[in-house]
Length: 222
Image 1: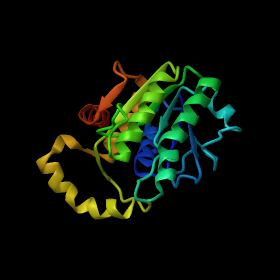
Image 2: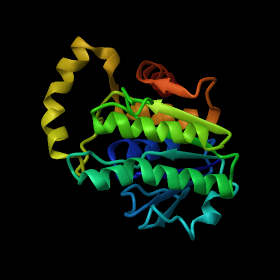
Image 3: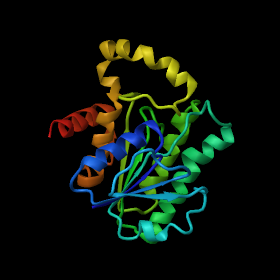
């Protein structure tokens, strides 16, 4: 199996790469991003691409690829509102259109988030734009789209590029895990769940946090 992953230097993307490396059914792992992953493995092929509003030049990587896991994202605290909208929605739209043109049968696994609002009316920009991106993916014509909605992602490993506010939140994860376990998912469990969705697909087009926890923990035991 050939798999594309974006956002590979982030918390979720890096765990997806780790899970894909040890998965024997994945033969080639194409990592597309502005910067290379720190992970190294013979099955990895790194593609440095700076402009996600224009994917011209990436055609060969998308053709004959089985699945894509879209982990590209950023905290709204790190960029302007305009930049956040471009990264959260426009980049996704451009990639979906590019897939439709070059490989419409590709399985597109999109990392959204708990509370994404498909009415696109939420006052929270994260919920509104994630909902907008979900709507576009589900209506753009791609044959196989899966929306993954993790909630609070607890890091298995520290990520140097994590937003400052997220780092401040780290000490609260044990308390949240104790009080509301279904709202927390370990990053490595999420990575395994996303890889499995890319490989096996899903009967439903939207997979919520509780289902991701079950799927990721099942894969972890295998």
